[in-house]
Structures are given as C-alpha cells and as structure tokens.
Length: 117
Length: 110
Image (tube, rainbow over all chains, first blue to last red; front, side, top):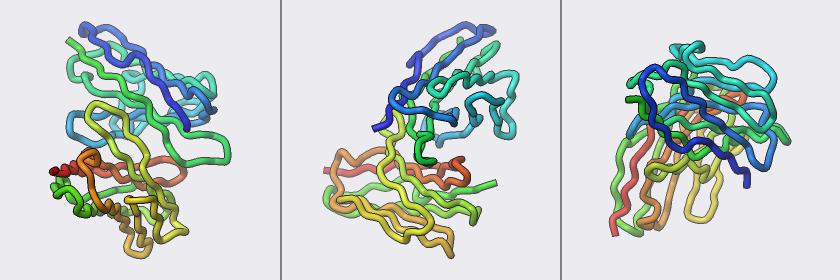
C-alpha cells in the first residue's frame, strides 16, 4: 500500500525558533498533499493544501506567513513553522493523495509532535 | 464550505456486539466518504470508503452505508473485538479535499 513518511516524529524547540517538517510519499507520486493539525482528543483540522509546483492553498484563519509550505517535488512537501510559540505546540500530520488514476484516498504520515517551550 | 457532524462522540460496547457511528454532511457536491481509524498517538488509517454512486459497501466485519438524499452515512462494525477500540473519523470529500467529523471514541469491553 501507499506509504507516507514524516520527519521528524517529534521536536522540542525554544520559542522564537523555526521548525521544518518534511512529508514524503515513498512509493507513489503525490501532486497534492495536505497538512493537518490535531489537538489532543480532537479532530483533524486542515491547515492547507499543498500542490506540487504551485502555491499552497490555506484554510481560513491559518496564517500563511506563519506556516510556510513548499511542495517542490511529487514526493516531498515541507511545512515550516516560523517563529514558533507555545501555542503552536500540537500534532502536525500530513497526508498525500496518489496521483495515479485520480485517486481520492488520502494516506497519512505518522505525524510530528511539536512542543514549543 | 462543507460541514460534517459525527455521532456519538463516545461509544462503549461489549465484545461481540455491533457498533454504529453516524455522520451527516452539508455539501451535496461531496462524492467520496472515507472512514479512518486512529489509535492513540498513531496516524489515521483508512478502513473503508464509499463513493456517492454506491449505497453500501462491506469488508468483512465492517460496512458503510450512504444515503445521498438525506446526506448521511454510517459505519457499522459487527462482532466487535477489543482491538477495534480506537477513535474513528468520518470524512466527506469534494474535489479531493476532505472535511472530517469530530471523531468517535469506541471502547470495546472484553
């Protein structure tokens, strides 16, 4: 099956620093990747849709200058949390759609747990 | 935009009993409805999905039904086992973008 990896799996950083999270589709090409944020015992909140070779589409209320997304290749999307603050602490999960055959199924990465001190 | 409501938020059943989780959606353009299972601290895993041109789909102990007219779909798990305990999310998808329900925490008691 389709495999999506995410790196790092967890990170602790000081307030004010920037953190980059990578999302990779390992055995398929993904023209579209999605970035979600999940708080404890809550649902997946879509932050943005990442499209290969073009600008990301951000959901309402998500600051694009705060959460920088780059989708430079068909297998890699990155999310950079700039000038992170404690309120940015969360579980960030990416997902990727298999481009072949116009599939709609999203395959999720294992998530990155971010703790900002 | 799309709005998905999921009920119940928590569900506790005895091993061997059936479990049913229901979701409603608002956007009639949504045409793909996946269900995900998420164990604590892990990624959501797709367990079953259904497309808008199908009314029911079954995979062993898991089944999903869809009523397009009423805009609701349901997950049915039969002969539940303790390893079915997890959080289950429904989603409604339109042009590839999914909106998730708030999740149902299922506990199967041995």
